[in-house]
Length: 450
Ligand code: S3P
Image 1 (cartoon, rainbow, N blue to C red):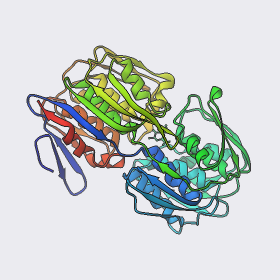
Image 2: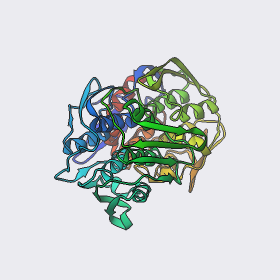
Image 3: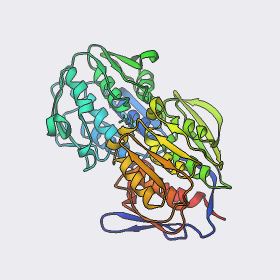
Image 4: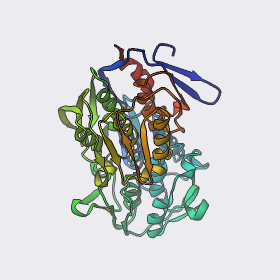
């Protein structure tokens, strides 16, 4: 692709993105859709695989992460049609009937694939599994899911006291337990609930703040008994469950919409409509934060689609104001902090992001990576162990940047680069295709030269 704003240069082992904003600046204009929600896509494939009967999925994210999930379950005897956003068919094998794979299950870059799958594998009796991932995933902490599974009697082995992939799992019948998670993590919660499906009795997870609840919603839709105690942030699944194949409609991913919400909010004259975005209350922290910052975002045509709230989002430029973000909003916007940091660089005053140490163990150390690279572009950023402070108003300049193979970093930096002065290069920009394969095409499409 060669033209004024975006140039993707494919070298032997990576794609270098060159962003060359027009001298007079640009605005963001148009009506777009974003790819399917990544969290819901993983869950639809997994529950479809475990259910009896056929699951049909509309709107699936065809990104590298869901491809990893599909590849793992295919290796365990599940028939899954080619992934496409229109219509995917999963022929479920029925709970407990996954085959022992004859080779290692590779989750690629996907923490959700590996952590959720561990709950499924550990409770699959008499079968042995080996799981691994890419360089990034093999350095990410797995003890957060290994520990609760061990509390249920699971047998799991791995490097560094069973805390790092590759991991080996000897599946067996587990015993129910009540796990008090020290972190608000939907991956931990979902792993334990999935292990509870095959475990006779009540398996409960309590978390310090409510994390995304897609698993709870979808498990119920597939027929499992799931009880939620909102007051204590506890969820209980009763096993053994019976799951029946369903029709799943995946809404657009609010984590992908977030790039456009911020882009239009920071450039005068911009107006974007993003259609069909999932607005589950456990995911809308980015809307709440941007609204606190004086953003102009309207939710239009609010509706419920297959058990998930959906809306069209209309965003117009507004002068953003700094705000403080921490506490229970963090799990509701955990994946949006990199792009929120870009928004903060354009807000009046100093934005404080705290209680977000979890960002250090995502696909990259997102606090360190964003703080360094926004600083390289001329922003005023102070990094803290659990967050950062960003003082807005310093103009951003083009710079030599790197995604660190983290999809959300690649896209956040691309937005920053499009509104900066001068040319930016972003190394390893191909990472965007983990969750948003056509991101750079859409960037080109919505940018209008002034
Ligand atoms: C996810 C949960 C979150 C999020 C990740 C997807 C999920 O991770 O960051 O991108 O689908 O359950 P944590 O559970 O580690 O917070």
